[in-house]
Length: 535
Image (cartoon, rainbow, N blue to C red; front, side, top):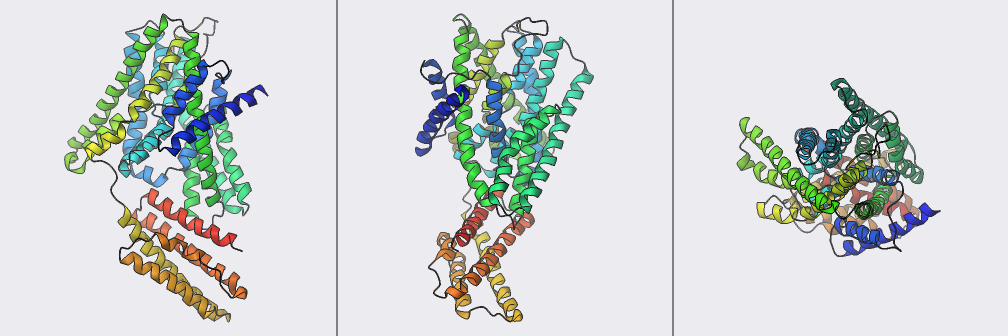
């Protein structure tokens, strides 16, 4: 009951602050984190949970799952080379360089310092995604940043596991390091692929939307725990399964639970984001209060040093990638790669994943000896998260100054909508012919009414007139012929399926950006749901 009361109170405060910021068009991450930090100082407000690792894991598993559901497997595949280079190479370089640099400043165990490097090496999927989209970055840059932040958690947490083993054992062999890395990656990928395939198959075969979405809601918890049980990467398993499920649903024109699922996960993700950042704020205050006043100067200095190192390492690594492209003969100046690299290098916000990872550092060695500097390094972690979130607010102005914001995609959307309307009209002609062959001809009045509505929309689109109104054409006044209502709905649903099939074809054959694809698919789902509810 005490845990339930704590969770309810924390959720109320976190969501309240998040709603306030959302209504004003602000990002929620920083205000909610600050609210959590303030509440940590108040005697009547919620305090940090007694077992933050369990609480944060329960929030972060579905949160990362929800973020991955909103990402695109196809978009990530197109930028897989820079994503994997950043998610693996940069995380490894950051871990080693942070640990090595701090070993020159404090006399903590070297394995503990490498553990801190692994904790802070991954960027945060939630923070990076929200900031990138609000900054209206070029679509390719958004895909790179989102892909990096989704994949690099698995790399960072794996390296953290190696560092913790070395910390407790006092030493670790190359063979042990290799074994831990392989088991973590292979285990996470195996659980993610198997779980994603299984959930997709079950979800596709059921017509019960409540049961289908209920299964998907509990999936991240099961997959995370299953992967961790076999010493695989739970985060990696959750990300892979979510990408599999999202791609499967968007490609299945007969999927009945997709529309409701999108709405459910939008709400869940909003709640989980608010809770995650609120908990980071609570933990920041709780950790500060456990330290003596004399430690604060050391912590401030370490936090500032780590932030500078994170920025410098990221800039050097990203521009080393640009230099490699130049060596291969690519003209990065004309392609805008150099300008985009500046934004990628600056977009290094850390978030709740790093906060969760920090608590995996054990309290004591195997012999019971307390681990020195543990609380100080936890505090450094939370301060670095706070500072990088503040710095992330400058990404938008930087992107506009460098002119790497997204271009107007109205022309692409209009062209695709033209193809969708034409596909619907072709399906109308086919349905009319098939009905004649079955001996049950469609009402000429019904067919003509629908054809005129879609033809009007097509004329507007071709003439470059605002096309938003045509999406409501299927929702207009009910027909006077009650006996033909069912046939009309079936005809309109068939035309929607034709639009959906054409949309999937354009995405797969012509490389339609997935964000545009998802928006148009959502509009089709919305129209279908309206038709089904009109019975």
